[in-house]
Image (cartoon, rainbow, N blue to C red):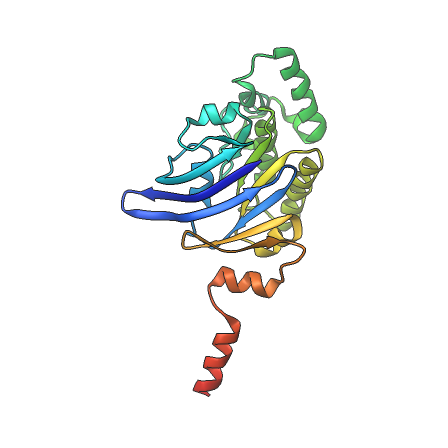
Length: 246
């Protein structure tokens, strides 16, 4: 579904992403995990067309999309849920949801999809006239996922969907994401929590200082290997150094 090869992203002199390569297969949840400043969000923004790559290739369903305008990429089946949710606080819940259908012309199907969102996220039905800014953090996260689904995406990029949410709410959000995966929607999820990624993803990439340090199946990678890549140390080497100093 998504192939990224040798991606470089720069902000003036700052090299935020340095040669990242990753792939996301159809119907997978793939997690991109790393500490603050690792290049996770920059990678997603470049894939979505929000920041042009300095170098590298990006293909969606086999077609190159690197450097295309965000709306062109969206029309090809990619939708992004940015960090911080970006709910339009003064617009109603209904208006926020329908914003996801702006580029569509099939109005009858849009209405059918809107009803499907209310079935998938039942609490929204009673809050349609409520300003988006009045919702809780967890409700806003579900709202923006519903908005993204209104584009009828093949691939959704989610930038830290658990950020700032209570653990029980995070569980609800990931229940929704796994349900979307089961419906055939492909997801690339940025996370800081290695535990969340291993628990909910199919595969994982660990990124640090703009480079991929580890990749593999969530069912096969151990917590120890993931933590070593995440924090940038080798346990065996550190233990040997500790013994030498002792």
